[in-house]
Length: 172
Image (cartoon, rainbow, N blue to C red; front, side, top):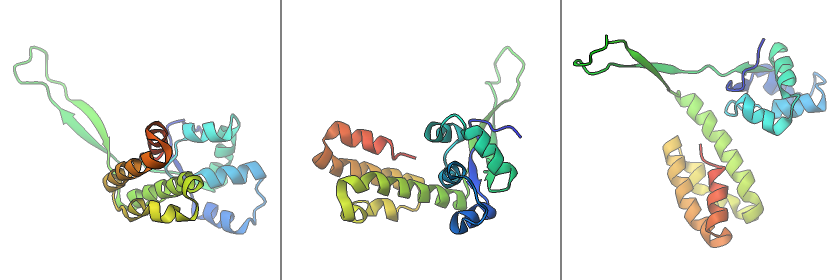
């Protein structure tokens, strides 16, 4: 099985059970990799975090059934050139991903976790109060709007450039 850098993996039921129970005796590096697999991060992103041997670890985790490929929902859109064009009309296909409610919810969960972990060093226990609009967001668009509002507040504490850099790491 080939692991492609653009693919996204999520934990299977077996993977989630292994994280909770630690019963299968995964190596420390394989366990850390399994923890980082969240259904949102691409293999390329995981490679940056884990290192060069990530591909072989991900491949082994997939073969052992701990992780599974996140199915990509693609809706083809057919675009036609104007009817007065001199060339014969051939449809062009553009793929636009469509996320299900479950996929959006999973993605928001990952984004919320990342936001809390990145904001916690700046706000300590009050991070939940500061990030409340992010936690209440139910769509990716609402999350983006909440981030814009949070950036305005962060300007006060971190300065404009540092606030913008921090919020850029939290965008979906």
